[in-house]
Image (cartoon, rainbow over all chains, first blue to last red; front, side):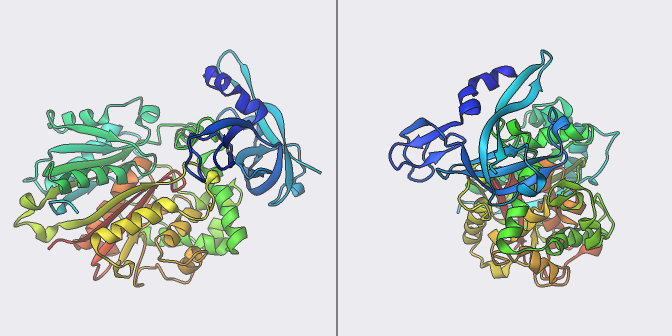
Length: 129
Length: 387
């Protein structure tokens, strides 16, 4: 399944989302049509790398492939441009992971995929102290 | 509204739980035969099988033709219907719509899920397929994780307490004690919920519907074939499906279940009913927080009051609008693609006086609400007594 990750490399490594050329709204994950104004004039746009935690959970039973990382934090992060990303929050003391905490994006190892053991990289956030 | 009225002529179901000795086809046939025996004169013109993950769970697709053939109904058009956990409710909607339009006069709807053959982490993976592979599964999030995020947001924004949230699983378990087809027939206290193991903070094990096998079926018929035998039937007054922004974290207001709100509003309008007339609701509480937000989306509770109202007894047996009268998703169980059909079977049992010890007296109108994803798809049925 490695090919699906290759397709998304810019999205995963640089947080490339969408910008509506009509109203200026920005989105991550990318969209095909603006959720605000309905325009289909959508272009790729690199997202800001900082934001704040809107809500979070500490997941004890993750998906297969993520067991070694559990328990870990997952948060809805609202970026500076208003886009909302679902992401892990890592390398941050437990007491710092809370609603409203400022976070910044980093590139991290997500999981090891398939029999060939390909390492999949992607975005995770850390609390900005 | 279309040409024909739509009736539920009969229903069948299996107990929900561990069916180690039965395959997905065994379960489907058992439930379907129960329905067919109840109305032998109604020959289904179409068959719809609501199911979410037979490919992953049983290495089996093509369930429509497979079920038709096993029932001796080869030749009948037959389809699998998938919309994650709302597959069953969606299947009922499609069958109902075709009958109402006059295109067909009868249909068999089966909802089935075979979950227990999988390891727990394989089940998590299968359920997570209801959410985005590229942006939700990719970060390791399970379906429970999304509901955990939502539960924290709900509690923090609207000041809902742990105990209030617990009242929904407590209600479910209480109602399931006397429900023969329920998976867990044991009453629990709020402490059982608040002390159970953490799944996705703040959601604990007893906030979450269990994993189980099961199948349920209804035989639907139009006006012509119902003539003369309506006494033991229920009428499907309205059936609506709506969808919402795909992932809950992409929505402007995560606390509004827009799919349920939209489908319920349209269904009430189709049926010409005020929500105040609803005397019973089967609510999709796959997680305690989902039950609360569903009650709010349908307007039975005000914003932030779904769990509180449950704690105050507003939805108990004996109240003016009991919910989850056989245990809901938490205690009757949640064999995902079958759940929406179980709800319809249960409403049918209530409306026709076949609910045994769980009978609610004087039921005029019943609503079933079946959700796929985090209210990404919602299927609403409004049932009434046949007349």
